[in-house]
Image 1 (cartoon, rainbow, N blue to C red):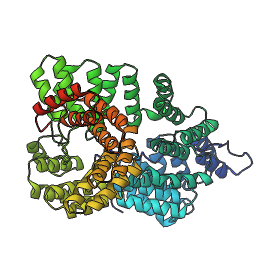
Image 2 (cartoon, helix red, strand yellow):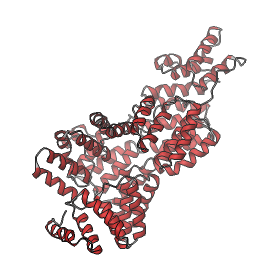
Image 3 (cartoon, helix red, strand yellow):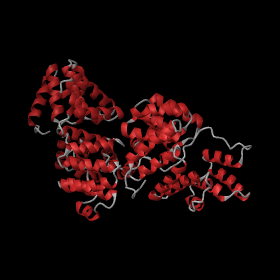
Image 4 (cartoon, one colour):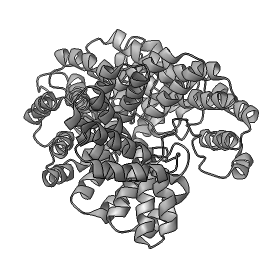
Length: 594
């Protein structure tokens, strides 16, 4: 296997760390020393293993019999320099050769030497071709090296050779989760826990999946099981913080998150949770700082941008808000709520003319078209950097797409894809270039390949656009349905499905999708509320229609759709003709684009 320079993409997997296994005890004293050392290593006690191994070395056991074990013991303690002293000579006995090269591969991977790690793992495979743990590490290396489709293949091999191995099952489940969503991964976790009921890593992943799917009670059961195994487990504290926040107990959530900081410190989901807790508790400055950090980590995450803007608005930082977001809030595809926040900030600054432009834009009809992802640097700078690294190529291709130079964008993206043929990022980037270049069928082919590794909402939206551009509207709906099934909290997917259902005359399905969106946080979206009011009115439920229409109108009084629907409801009821007349006069004055 060959590996190239590590691309600068967000990685879903950490380095090769051993999972904590509940119920491990000290090595049995009656066993031979090498067995006692191996037991300590299996329990994650690198220091204990090292003590035993050094005693054996002092007693005259040949170094080539112990070097692999000593290297592993040092790695478990995070002492890579010391591990290299035992492993670099590659002098391993025939019985420990596979383990020695395996540990050397882990060492090289930890030090960022990916090609060297690949060579070491290749040597280890000659002695341990069916070891599930080795295949897990090979998969992790492939993922780090941009060979993500090959990493998926390695995960399948790991489970094949270790159908009950917790590391193999966890790795396979992580990749299935990213590609197929939380619903698809639950059966895998349940099967894994049948043979590993007390494995904290599996329990934590299972609890997190349950939480994402909204199964709060089942999640609580899993978390409580974790605390019976280890009542100070930092991940259990973090998961309890999630539960507390969802229940609205933000003070408790903050305390629990602090206790779980050892696990959650650099986890994007935990950083987001911390910011939301601070926002709910009125700590707007802290929330803004945290969201700013997350925005730098995930520059393409539109939800993080909106939350950051909201935090700045609540904290009264109106000048910073308009400075940072005015240029993007009116872009095609920008969240209307972001434009509303910018408009309100301009109002607070006394600049009513500018405020009106943003508020009118926010109140206008949705533009469902996709917008090119922004490039982090200007195109002329990106062209100087070329395609030397992954991040350089991303900046260049995005800049070329924005500059409407599709042929050059496709050429640059293909250079990247051929350099890393198994990279989901490279395939997705090439798909963007082809979609922009008017080749939706080829774009969709690449998107589907990328989705075999992971399918975030940004990719799913582009898959929908490619299907529609190819005239495959039913396939576009299937993508949206699959996305909502894997991510039930995705209100955008639910809203798009509702719009499609209403367009086809299926009001019942539209109502289900809209109610789902409202239950998952779309209650401040006037467009969703207005659509829901129309469905209620069509169904003869005038009181319900009036409630939804009134909420939509209060949120955006200059929104033409919300005004029209409220007028329609009031006219049907005939209970407030004076207000209906006022709304009718107002509607006549509103521009048709609002």
